[in-house]
Image (cartoon, rainbow, N blue to C red; front, side, top):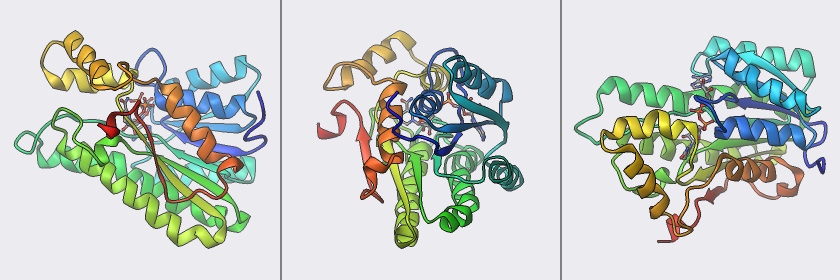
Length: 263
Ligand SMILES: NC(=O)c1ccc[n+]([C@@H]2O[C@H](COP(=O)([O-])OP(=O)(O)OC[C@H]3O[C@@H](n4cnc5c(N)ncnc54)[C@H](O)[C@@H]3O)[C@@H](O)[C@H]2O)c1
């Protein structure tokens, strides 16, 4: 532990994991705690958030679980209120929640399109909008939004709604960065490439319909480094952007993809 975010209060949304192993949100919560932050692990599945809390407290870190669906304005308001009441400040807002639904233009229904935008974009708008007044009062804070390289590239299979939501995340982040730069608030996003997380097993391979092992092999093979990344790669990028080491960085898109977007 080198205390890179010592005594900062960090909200991590989607801090549990959809399945066994390390999701991006869970690893990020653990890394913030290891580096000295007090973490609020938010998840609509309280037991998933509690597993993250248990991991962190077992290591001697500080973390509490909070149940909230971040697509709900009411839940987000309660989450922020409770955070300010219990911890007095919000230094880091890490928006991890996002679901990847695979499908092309002819396959995605209007309902799925709306669901993707609610979970992947509206959630981030709501959390940012609700945290910002406190952040402005403090005069300093960092927002880290989890986007995807699908926001800037075709990633090998159709995902029209997912890619569109992540493009919106990049713009949402830039708009906030510009609006609040003079008030000491930084907003950046991370564009993970093909990461090997429980979410991939849960959504992407199931939506694909073909041989799952073959798809996993293909995902490894698509990367110039010949392997998918891990949740820790996303977590360490987030740690940097959230820390004071990145104090002159705002409105950027940090690609974490083993080189795919150079191809
Ligand atoms: N794995 C990859 O290859 C990859 C690539 C690029 C981007 N990403 C991004 O990473 C993020 C997901 O990372 P993860 O591995 O932690 O995912 P995950 O699917 O494991 O989800 C983490 C948690 O989010 C919670 N959650 C889902 N919807 C919620 C809601 N509405 N309110 C509150 N909690 C909710 C789930 O209960 C789960 O515990 C997404 O934004 C995704 O787009 C992943």
